[in-house]
Image 1 (cartoon, one colour):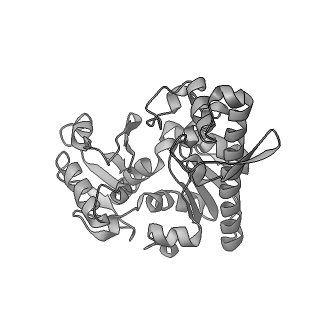
Image 2: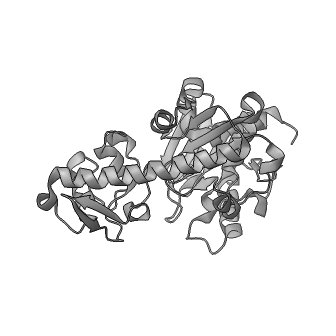
Image 3: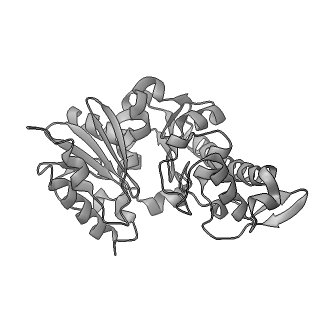
Length: 310
């Protein structure tokens, strides 16, 4: 049994050998079958969860669901797909949309009931109270945005002006321009939160992922060259972004903790180490190793094994 999480930007696979993350944006001609065939072996089955159906290359969520289901079943004809009703399905149904967060809760609920899961990923942050699985069923991304349990900001792919509107450069309030000049990966690399090999998405300008290239992109956010504002100015942009992003996540997490009375904080996703230090939470990497970076893919595999007849 392997676990698969098909996101809009990444395809994550968990096997008995560990976890594997493939940059596989669905807004391009996505090679899902080609990637999955490398994991196919005689008698191998697959449990699948998704969030990539929201990619704007699809006219609707159900169109995206059908594309993902067909792509996976091209390689694993008997694959089972986990839905927001906490059930497995064989075919494309609306309940499959964005159920990856729920399967993580399903897996963790038994041993960490009463806790709060913070999954800080490349694109979004899931804030999931592990109080009652029934209370979480049927929650769409729209409902989760409204409830504050989905914060649409991540470690790598968030645009800088999506989080901040101005920075203070040498004491002068400076608006940022709403262009896709830099992303959260640029800020986090410059601040030392990630390394170059962890910058796994495409860069906004298609250029390098080294520190100087990140500084140059961050300078563009205030319509400047790096030579105009210097490293200090570019780092100020990065710091302003992280301060605001951290505040967004912490404020949302605090509100959910108060609403549900949760206690233990569990942290997963590629930003687990960073956010666990911010929130004083438990980094699930210590329990799950690299699979914590791909928690939904790991969880859907475990839940499928736990429920073989579903």
